[in-house]
Every structure is written in structure tokens, then in C-alpha cells.
Length: 219
Image (tube, rainbow, N blue to C red):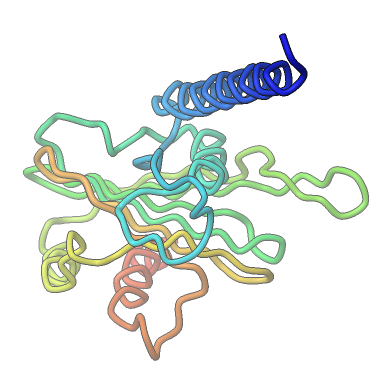
């Protein structure tokens, strides 16, 4: 066998090994993502994983961003809404403003006779010199309101039409996170915004503030 043919054979074997390795790594990555879907609190982005943050306007969150939000909701012992199949009606708003504010969630459960309003808050636990992680629950309260109060919020949600609002995997430094979820009669949708401003998200902010206000009015 001459030297040129030997080089070609070695090269083809090398390419084959690389191809197999890449295939295995890809399969592992997909398996890892899909294997964690049941622990995520939001629909998980499994395609175009290179679009980590930015204007990926599908109604999914990148696994890394999804895990950040899911960690807080797990610590608050909150239910996963997006894979529910019952005929209930639930609204949940989560506000994260670390490190300046404690993580907080408001969950409204609407029934035929009233609305239960649950508010939960976590402390922040410091690790190392400056890193913070979600700590233990420091608030967990529930009270009830009549359906008459809820009508205005319901009308605003219908007008906002959450199903047609894009969700972007955007993130930055020293900002706040607003995550609004709505589950109604088997249909789930959510909107996530990083540091929204009244200039471009006034309707969205107004809905979140209404949810906050109903709790604060009853403190």
C-alpha cells in the first residue's frame, strides 16, 4: 500500500470518529434537555439551542433561563401550570429583582364562587463573597376575594390577549424579571419580560400591578 492511500485511509477514519463523537454529544444534549422537561415550569426550547438569549420569539424558554425561573418556583413549592389538563383557571405572576428585592409570586385560583389569592416570598441566601441563591420561604399566605373584584382583571387579560404576545429569551444586568402565566380550561400561555418599561409594555405592567395591588390591599 503506498503512502498516499495510507494517508487517505487514516483521514477517513479520523473523520468517521469525529462524526460519531459529534452525533453522540448531540444525542446526549437532546436527551438531557428532554429528560428535564418534567421539572421545568415553562415550555422548554429544544431546537435552536444556540439562541440562548435574544429575540427567539417562540413561546418557549431556553433551558438555562427556564431553569433559573423553575428553581425559584420549586423553592416556593408552586405547581407546574403548563402541563395541566383540567378545567381550572389559574393566573400566576412572578417578580424577580435580585439582589435588591426578594423573589415573590402571586397566584390567583378562580372558582365558581370566589378567587383565592396566594402570595409567596423567598429570602435570598448568600454564598461566597457576592453570589446569591434563592433561600427559604419567608411568606406564604392565602386569602379570598369575590368574583366581582376579579372581573376588571379578567377583562384586562382578555384585552391584552396573552396568546398573541411574544416571549423573548432576553436577560441583562441589574434588572427585574416579570413572568405572567395564565392557565384556563386546558389552555396555557405565558409572557416573560426583562425590565419592561411603561413606554413599551404599559398594558403588561398594568396587569402585573393589578395582581400585586389586590394582595397589598388586604395586608
